[in-house]
Length: 203
Ligand code: HEM
Image (tube, rainbow, N blue to C red):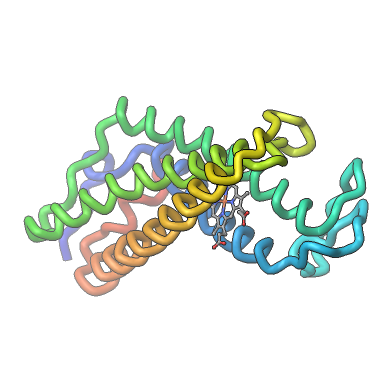
């Protein structure tokens, strides 16, 4: 088992924090995206929503709205927040060189892992951006946790085009994420080379 040299081979704590926060945020956005699409268009308006019908947290809103618009608004609010964090993450990545990939990896594995990382950066940026452009093209626009950010221009062809981009980029994220997680599991639990520990907090 190759030992992990502390600091020289580990990611920066800020990179680690952004990695897990944005990763969990994106998974949450998928769950929310699929969940909200299933909500019927015609449903009574309300001032209170039991989040995901789990009976854990009830969210009060200032203005009566349908369940569909509550979850769509939530998706947009969390999505815009994540988008800002993702821009910061890209800025951080460009100004802080990550540690080199471990030498236990074969050259082809390093090439695939690097391509997957670049692909994920591109898609993390492009997926919410497509969502933002789609929402501006719709008649609803974007509000952020109740604050009106930008109105909609109601352009149907643009809305439909960016909805397709939003879905395709999202599916590509899922595809790359599958190999990203499979690679991390294989290196950590089969090769036992400390890959996962590099991405965990340290002093
Ligand atoms: C990383 C961020 C995001 C992820 C992973 C994500 C994921 C998803 C998913 C899985 C769906 C369901 C698509 C389907 O029908 O299969 C969806 C729909 C949608 N997303 Fe996002 N989203 C993100 C960010 C955003 C942002 C930032 C906005 C806008 C501010 C947005 C606006 C929408 C809207 C309006 C829909 C519904 C489209 C429709 O059916 O009319 N999304 N999203």
